[in-house]
Amino acid sequence: MLSKNKIKYIQSLKDKKGRAEHGVFVAEGNKMVGELLHSIPCQLLVATSGFLENNSVPQVGELIEATEDELCKASFLKTPQQVLGIFVIPSWDSQKVDWAGSLSLMLDGIQDPGNLGTIIRLADWYGIRHIICSPDTADVYNPKVVQATMGALARVQVHYMDLPEWLAAHSGIPVYGTFLDGENMYGQTLSASGVIVMGNEGNGIRPEVAEYISRRLFIPIFPPGSQSSESLNVAVATAIVCAEFRRREIYR
Amino acid sequence: MLSKNKIKYIQSLKDKKGRAEHGVFVAEGNKMVGELLHSIPCQLLVATSGFLENNSVPQVGELIEATEDELCKASFLKTPQQVLGIFVIPSWDSQKVDWAGSLSLMLDGIQDPGNLGTIIRLADWYGIRHIICSPDTADVYNPKVVQATMGALARVQVHYMDLPEWLAAHSGIPVYGTFLDGENMYGQTLSASGVIVMGNEGNGIRPEVAEYISRRLFIPIFPPGSQSSESLNVAVATAIVCAEFRRREIYR
Image (cartoon, rainbow over all chains, first blue to last red; front, side):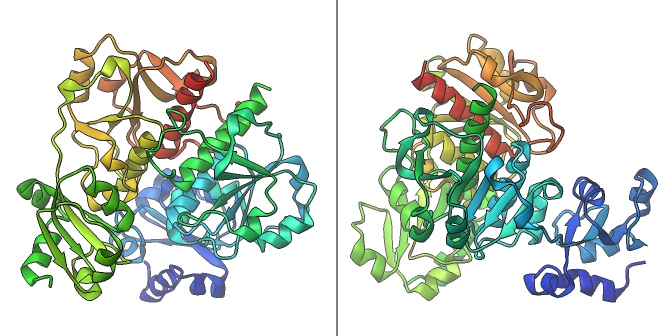
């Protein structure tokens, strides 16, 4: 049975303050929880008897069997799930990452949780293991971000850092960014490793970050030169750029 | 001044029933309204004095100057805007479209309004003028869809139709779809015109639609053959496929 206190505790994790205080975050649903259970320590698992009958559960801190009604009270979702897990926020060591030998993403002030989650999910698809976010980017452990990753959080490490400082300290690495006045990306050399910077939904990449970007790319509009839409959604633009980097990698 | 009755009327347009009854939809914000004002008849425009001083307004059915407080009461958005427009739902004639001579999208049961809006926006970027949706796809005039299109609704026509029936009646047109067991799209011939089918977020393309798809594409994961993420967000997948069709078109 799920006590009122536990429901209150879970609800407190909806906010960044609550998550920071307890060092944990919430994930919901069979697929999400199933993926995380095998890669991130679980402090508390709340599940229906139906879930527990059909799924093998590895070692967790605490396991509570609950009714659907109880889960519904704890849930952040409109469509409540059979399982909810509270997971320990991992502490990734960015010093250990081989930045020069891999392709990474850098996000400068992405605000929308759905966009951030979708970018993490597509990073996973394209074998991008590290994302560097500016401190004002949405919190990766916001429940809306967690759910939008569809489990990719188990495989992609998200680091929050001062971007200009990081860029200054890693000057040997190729840095790409998309700009409306950039060069057609299909005509450019794209390296197998480096950092791709994507900017805020409304304002794009900040000047203090942009000054480190030596390779300014443009995603060609079609037909070329037409004046229709002014921009693409940032997750969509990230996807198109990452797909092209990986296509070159395969067909080099 | 914005009367209580007008606020009630605007609020009634949040639901499909209200929109169907009155044949209109709501758009908010300078950019959105600005783009639509020049392409779709406007029944009612509600704007602050600030907006009216800085923007030239073409002929509209009715123009109401309102305070920010009044606009706030009428708004569907968390961050209220300077302007809100009620526009006449256009009736597009699908019979007049040159389906065989252009590239179009077909959406089979896309549920999320954000995904639909993002797809309309990227269609606009890639010069795709027509999208065919199954009747159970999200309503294009849902305020969340309208806002996510960022004005692209002014240039992309969305048609709701029975998909198997339409496909049966247009058998000469190449039909593409993405499948996890499809062929690597980079190795396939992609025609300059045809229809690209994208499926529901959870269930993909329905069998009764899939049977018409002769060209089954796969977006390669990286590194090839890896077993990470199971799928991409549908708007992201649509973007990657459309980008590749248009890249071929330019570099054919």
